[in-house]
Amino acid sequence: STLFKCASNPNSVKTLTADRSVICYEDDWNEMVGLGVTAILIWVVGFAVLFGWAIWRSPKQFPRIEFQTRWKFLFIKYRADVHWWSMVYVVKGILLNLGFLVFDAAIWQIYWILVTLVIYLCACIAFTPWRHMWVNVLDI
Image (tube, rainbow, N blue to C red; front, side, top):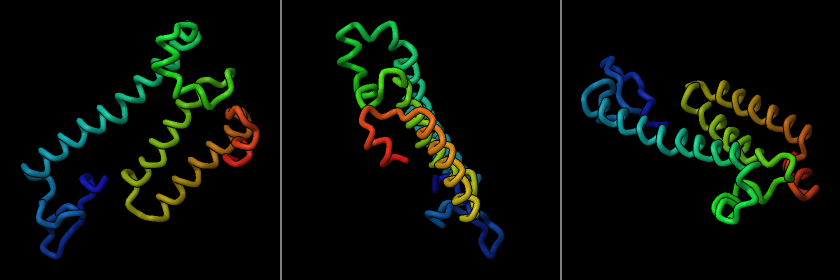
Protein backbone atom coordinates (compact mmCIF):
# COMPACT_ATOMS: atom_id res chain seq x y z
CA SER A 1 0.00 0.00 0.00
CA THR A 2 3.02 2.30 0.30
CA LEU A 3 3.07 2.62 -3.49
CA PHE A 4 -0.18 4.56 -3.31
CA LYS A 5 0.84 6.82 -0.40
CA CYS A 6 2.20 10.18 -1.49
CA ALA A 7 3.22 12.96 0.88
CA SER A 8 3.75 16.68 0.38
CA ASN A 9 7.20 18.19 0.71
CA PRO A 10 8.29 21.76 1.53
CA ASN A 11 8.74 22.44 -2.20
CA SER A 12 5.06 21.44 -2.71
CA VAL A 13 6.01 18.38 -4.80
CA LYS A 14 4.37 15.14 -3.72
CA THR A 15 6.71 12.19 -3.41
CA LEU A 16 6.28 8.56 -2.49
CA THR A 17 6.25 8.09 1.27
CA ALA A 18 8.45 5.00 1.09
CA ASP A 19 11.00 6.52 -1.32
CA ARG A 20 11.23 10.32 -1.49
CA SER A 21 13.17 10.14 -4.77
CA VAL A 22 10.03 9.00 -6.63
CA ILE A 23 7.81 11.93 -7.60
CA CYS A 24 4.12 11.05 -7.56
CA TYR A 25 1.98 11.34 -10.69
CA GLU A 26 5.00 11.30 -13.01
CA ASP A 27 6.04 8.59 -15.50
CA ASP A 28 7.98 6.32 -13.11
CA TRP A 29 5.27 6.46 -10.49
CA ASN A 30 2.50 5.88 -13.07
CA GLU A 31 4.29 2.77 -14.35
CA MET A 32 4.67 1.43 -10.81
CA VAL A 33 1.00 2.12 -10.06
CA GLY A 34 -0.03 0.26 -13.20
CA LEU A 35 2.08 -2.73 -12.17
CA GLY A 36 0.79 -2.50 -8.58
CA VAL A 37 -2.86 -2.40 -9.63
CA THR A 38 -2.29 -5.35 -11.97
CA ALA A 39 -0.66 -7.35 -9.16
CA ILE A 40 -3.51 -6.53 -6.78
CA LEU A 41 -6.10 -7.55 -9.36
CA ILE A 42 -4.34 -10.86 -10.02
CA TRP A 43 -3.42 -11.82 -6.46
CA VAL A 44 -6.23 -10.39 -4.39
CA VAL A 45 -9.26 -10.20 -6.66
CA GLY A 46 -8.22 -13.12 -8.88
CA PHE A 47 -7.71 -15.57 -6.03
CA ALA A 48 -10.84 -14.36 -4.24
CA VAL A 49 -12.86 -15.03 -7.42
CA LEU A 50 -11.20 -18.42 -7.87
CA PHE A 51 -11.92 -19.45 -4.27
CA GLY A 52 -15.46 -18.10 -4.55
CA TRP A 53 -16.00 -20.17 -7.69
CA ALA A 54 -14.73 -23.32 -5.92
CA ILE A 55 -16.97 -22.69 -2.92
CA TRP A 56 -19.99 -22.02 -5.13
CA ARG A 57 -19.38 -25.25 -7.10
CA SER A 58 -18.60 -27.36 -4.01
CA PRO A 59 -22.10 -28.70 -3.20
CA LYS A 60 -22.30 -30.43 -6.59
CA GLN A 61 -18.61 -31.19 -7.12
CA PHE A 62 -17.50 -32.31 -3.67
CA PRO A 63 -18.31 -36.01 -4.21
CA ARG A 64 -15.57 -36.06 -6.88
CA ILE A 65 -12.19 -37.12 -5.47
CA GLU A 66 -10.32 -34.70 -7.74
CA PHE A 67 -12.34 -31.75 -6.42
CA GLN A 68 -11.81 -32.83 -2.81
CA THR A 69 -8.06 -33.18 -3.31
CA ARG A 70 -7.69 -29.80 -5.00
CA TRP A 71 -9.97 -27.70 -2.78
CA LYS A 72 -10.16 -29.39 0.63
CA PHE A 73 -7.99 -26.68 2.22
CA LEU A 74 -10.99 -24.35 1.80
CA PHE A 75 -13.41 -26.66 3.61
CA ILE A 76 -11.59 -28.97 6.03
CA LYS A 77 -11.55 -26.57 9.00
CA TYR A 78 -15.24 -25.66 8.90
CA ARG A 79 -18.51 -27.43 9.60
CA ALA A 80 -20.32 -28.77 6.55
CA ASP A 81 -23.29 -26.42 6.88
CA VAL A 82 -20.94 -23.41 6.76
CA HIS A 83 -18.59 -24.74 4.09
CA TRP A 84 -18.46 -21.22 2.62
CA TRP A 85 -16.79 -19.71 5.72
CA SER A 86 -13.34 -19.64 4.12
CA MET A 87 -14.67 -16.93 1.81
CA VAL A 88 -15.67 -14.87 4.87
CA TYR A 89 -12.14 -15.37 6.18
CA VAL A 90 -10.62 -14.20 2.88
CA VAL A 91 -12.89 -11.15 2.75
CA LYS A 92 -12.00 -10.31 6.36
CA GLY A 93 -8.32 -10.28 5.43
CA ILE A 94 -8.93 -8.09 2.40
CA LEU A 95 -11.05 -5.63 4.38
CA LEU A 96 -8.54 -5.38 7.21
CA ASN A 97 -5.77 -4.48 4.77
CA LEU A 98 -7.98 -2.14 2.76
CA GLY A 99 -8.26 0.23 5.72
CA PHE A 100 -4.54 1.04 5.53
CA LEU A 101 -4.87 1.92 1.87
CA VAL A 102 -8.02 4.02 2.14
CA PHE A 103 -7.39 6.00 5.32
CA ASP A 104 -4.36 8.17 6.04
CA ALA A 105 -5.14 9.02 9.65
CA ALA A 106 -4.23 6.32 12.16
CA ILE A 107 -7.42 6.82 14.15
CA TRP A 108 -9.60 6.04 11.11
CA GLN A 109 -7.50 2.97 10.36
CA ILE A 110 -8.10 1.77 13.92
CA TYR A 111 -11.83 2.44 13.62
CA TRP A 112 -11.90 0.52 10.34
CA ILE A 113 -10.16 -2.46 11.94
CA LEU A 114 -12.48 -2.37 14.95
CA VAL A 115 -15.64 -2.22 12.84
CA THR A 116 -14.40 -5.02 10.57
CA LEU A 117 -13.49 -7.24 13.52
CA VAL A 118 -16.78 -6.55 15.33
CA ILE A 119 -18.72 -7.59 12.23
CA TYR A 120 -16.55 -10.72 11.94
CA LEU A 121 -17.07 -11.41 15.67
CA CYS A 122 -20.85 -11.17 15.32
CA ALA A 123 -20.76 -13.52 12.34
CA CYS A 124 -18.59 -15.99 14.31
CA ILE A 125 -21.05 -15.93 17.19
CA ALA A 126 -24.02 -16.39 14.84
CA PHE A 127 -22.55 -19.23 12.76
CA THR A 128 -19.87 -20.91 14.95
CA PRO A 129 -18.14 -22.07 11.77
CA TRP A 130 -15.19 -24.06 13.09
CA ARG A 131 -15.45 -27.84 13.43
CA HIS A 132 -14.10 -27.84 16.98
CA MET A 133 -15.95 -25.81 19.59
CA TRP A 134 -12.75 -24.63 21.28
CA VAL A 135 -11.60 -23.03 18.05
CA ASN A 136 -14.88 -21.11 17.93
CA VAL A 137 -14.33 -19.98 21.51
CA LEU A 138 -10.76 -18.87 20.78
CA ASP A 139 -11.79 -17.07 17.60
CA ILE A 140 -14.47 -15.16 19.49
